[in-house]
Amino acid sequence: MSATIISGNLIASKFREELKQRVKLLSETWMQPGLAVILVGDNPASCVYVRNKAKTCDELGIHSEVFNLPGDTSQKALLRQIQDLNANPEIHGILVQLPLPDHIRIDEVIAAIATEKDVDGFHPCNVGALATGHALFHPCTPLGVMKMLSEHAIPLQGQHAVVVGRSNIVGKPMALMLLEKGATVTICTSRTRDLASHTLSADIVVMATGKSNLLTADMIKPGATVIDVGINRLPDGRLCGDVEFTGVKEKAGYITPVPGGVGPMTIVMLMNNTIEAAERAKAAAQAVAGCGSMQ
Ligand code: NDP
Image (cartoon, rainbow, N blue to C red; front, side, top):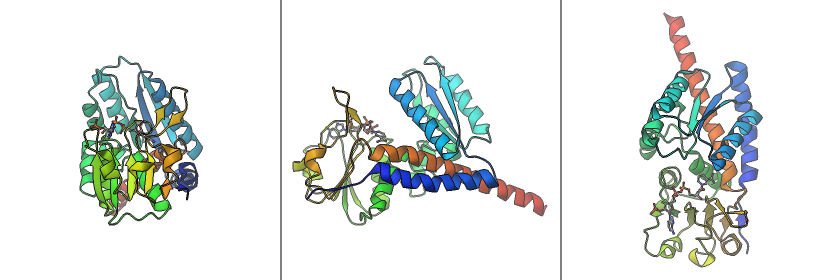
């Protein structure tokens, strides 16, 4: 029997309605949530991602500012830009579009973002908080995957989840979030011997490698949930994931497509984190105002 398709497009559009209501409430009772996106250079894929983020902000009523900095921007100038945004009360979320040019020290840049505005969840303090189960912001892509799993009521507790990929933005936080929900988690990498021996015992497989068609039907057990984070461009220009979709969907229980799977969820989770940052800023401002009136 063919797998149930987990449609990111469908879940994301449902979630967007909820986000619109939260933005409306904030705008009517306090101020518009604000997101700043910094792009250094003109990487074509990054330009598309940044345009999409600004467009989604517009659609939801979130104030957005895009800073297109030249590719030869110095480390110092970039840090100054982040400091300005850290101090800007109209901006609740700051995102630095990755990758950055080679001369920029990425760790230093991410560490410069105020933790309460780090809507990507990449700041080392937020990564540590996630590892201890007290995340301020969950990184957007794995958070989107968790929403997709919960939307379909896919059980996690006691299930064996195999995450293939160990990047800081997808694989590692994904593994931590599944662990937090009680799954037994295995992380595989390019150095893993016999990948199939791990994926074959998995109830849930999350693929985040950037290698097209790496996971094939003979590598999963019948009924497994298969989440495909990969976005790869084929020589003919079409997009595909890390999963050989046609074969795997005949054996899996649930599967995400590419495109239309995890991708649309990622951007909606970025909006969610920005609204959450604004909601916290509002609560903090009201607490200060409350203290003032008691004096
Ligand atoms: P990275 O290149 O940073 O990491 C890839 C990971 O995959 C590495 O840990 C690597 O192992 C592992 N890997 C590579 N080949 C194999 C293999 N043959 N077997 C097992 N593991 C392997 O990529 P990202 O995590 O940034 O992104 C992964 C994919 O997800 C990409 O296609 C990217 O475009 C996509 N993506 C999609 C998003 C979305 O919204 N849908 C958001 C972000 C990313 P090792 O560490 O040993 O090198």
